[in-house]
Image (spheres, rainbow, N blue to C red):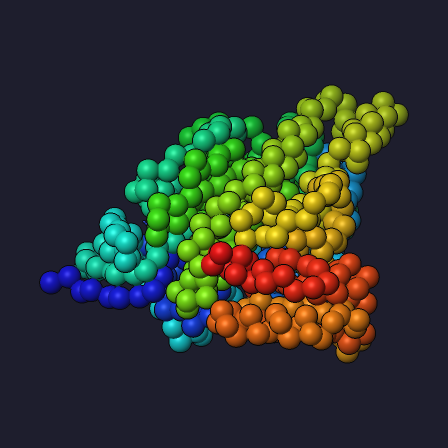
Length: 533
Ligand SMILES: Cc1cc2nc3c(=O)[nH]c(=O)nc-3n(C[C@H](O)[C@H](O)[C@H](O)COP(=O)(O)OP(=O)(O)OC[C@H]3O[C@@H](n4cnc5c(N)ncnc54)[C@H](O)[C@@H]3O)c2cc1C
């Protein structure tokens, strides 16, 4: 007989996106069943950058410090990108503090980025999800199919031991990655270009490699030598590194011996290389034509894919999990209206498009194969290297300076944002200019006692008030929140110049730290911001 389990939200896939959605929902008291076909998280070692936005969510979830403690080389290891002819060769160009990973405090955000393997992030997120009483995680359990009606979803799962399970849930989130079965089920199609290039990600152990070259600590050494392009960098403790040769053909595989030989040739360093794993992946530019069919909703790689140039994919997917999490929770708890969950696609799709375009722009900045003399210790070699280095310095910075994209993309034309008239500030992918305009991320500030302004925001909506804001208008907002059953915290941050920072007396901030509305007189927009209007 098939067991039947009832839950509020069934999440397929315990990658970073499924885990983010589970935590966001679980922290809000929503029952979640998170299922993963593998026996553990973090099977393929992929992303290494947890960006400032992801780590800010981790701070809200109470696990940013736990991730920092897992930094494989220490939290202040330089997040530098170094372009070299080969590890044993010449340096061409260097970018310091890629992705804002320096632990120095910035007024722009409360958490810096961190170089940490995706599997370590997933391990920390899994521990958090499991600590939440209403979240259940089942490994070795695969999604098979689902059907839905106006009340909910009924899904069929199968354990790796062959046991069948039937799940009833109010919503199903398909966070099942690039080859999403949930996407197939709802008939969504990926549109764009598949197979831009084919790659091979080799993880290996090489004791002594860090000390065997002269370029100092960095996270990726981009090797542009006479035998082609490759990227190599330290990934984890115990001398674990990652190597990605360029020019791989579709379906090409290497034996461990061939992989070790290739690393030896490309680095120019003759050390013992122990191959730990090899994982093929394909760069594509794809976006789903739709993200949802009523109660079944896609998130993460299941609905968007792009080359990892800029470190955006996982981080953007974590943002999907957060967005869906608070909206589904509010809907199930009765304070989210009928338009709230639908606003997920309206708001996230333009962000996905903009990030894909940004990643494609980075991917397109192709470093042309250099003349063979680039490695020569001659005046001609010096001149070729100087020219190549100048070209790299002028063109590749955009890929590593990403704050404008990570923090500066605002929700526009959203039904749950009270738009303001007038032109927006010009978007710059590299530079983030905080703006409290509705739709944008609420500007950050540090409090005199060292806490972040974001630490004062509630789990529901927050009303950030300036010193000179009208008390009667605040009272009206509080009365509305009581009438409508919408959680609203009044935030009066001592020592923060709210009027200057937010350019308003009252600013309504959503659970995801985006501004919903701002003004001087309360206009009753809580209903609209929660999809009730
Ligand atoms: C080489 C490389 C480097 C990258 N670097 C970065 C980076 O620095 N920064 C960044 O942000 N992104 C990076 N990315 C992208 C990032 O790895 C992905 O965007 C991210 O893993 C997507 O997360 P996800 O949870 O949507 O999907 P996945 O991580 O693919 O997780 C989906 C999960 O669903 C499970 N699943 C699938 N089907 C089923 C089923 N039927 N039943 C149950 N479970 C199922 C899978 O086993 C898997 O665990 C990189 C990618 C690559 C290839």
